[in-house]
Length: 468
Image (cartoon, rainbow, N blue to C red; front, side, top):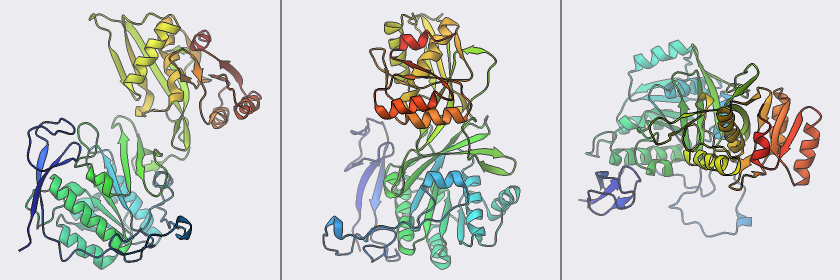
């Protein structure tokens, strides 16, 4: 009888420990270690590809000699277009055969709707799709398909939780894409742990990835997220798969955002924007004006900026509100951007612009639920706070972009020409940007000056004086 090995894995950080401890020494989380048992090798596990230069990657068991980089042939990545342009953008152009995709999101956000629509689009192009539903019966999945108007004959529905039975179906049908919705309820009968545990998730995920690599069938694992907004299960899942996507949105808004945080076959930090309608998710090819509103006159506390999201530029409205603090300690509430970044901007406004905000409650919100990490939004956040405090604002045809330094200076931003071109396309008439020092940015400003009025500012104090 084969020996087994027992160890413990932290649910929060994925660190492995040789024995149980009340507190994880790596992430300091209490009661987060879960026991795992290494079972004997599964004789039914499929072999991985033996071609060291195959389309899905190398076989780690193959004894291939070390070669020079120049001797290794080019890696041509074939892709399967899903038919949803925004989803293809996030994936890097489409689904790579043999790849593993992990899609996470809040319950009810539309993960099943997205994958069912993508599977139907691919089926209509002649690809075989296997949709494995572990949470719903085949009849419930059929009802959703009927509401969405999907149901091609090449889209196969299989309601099952047993991994061994799912593996047999994958080996039988050889689908181009297998969708597992969701991976938290899949279990392996040889593992005594309950479904959704760290041990089950690890074994099931690795088994499905082996199947994908062996048969060149792409697999998409739909997962849940924790209360902290992270994918449920150990971090090991994110390391095993090729692509990690987050499906974000607010049930009170009709738009949804698919964000890429890892992609071995494309760029990361790409976003795809959809609108949730009666017939399902609709890709928004031009979502530049989705997150901004037109205000009559100059609205104090509302500034529009051009934020980079992957390779696209989005016009985003930043709103701020300052009120007298009644509790003795001023509050700082932020939604859609880094709270530490906003705290730094408030400190610069007090020190360099002469605004007294120490006794003010400051609220900052990026409209539409979008999360902005672009430093070029610093100037817009600062002017929104200053405008609310001074009861002054900018007209809705004014765009602000610039990074803020601790000395109160507005610093250079990347992709200035692309931001100005997008602003001109959207009809903005005035743009506030930092003073540019490079020849390329100077040329971009000169070209944009033909269609818009440019206000280059060296310091934040100069930008604040432009508030009406």
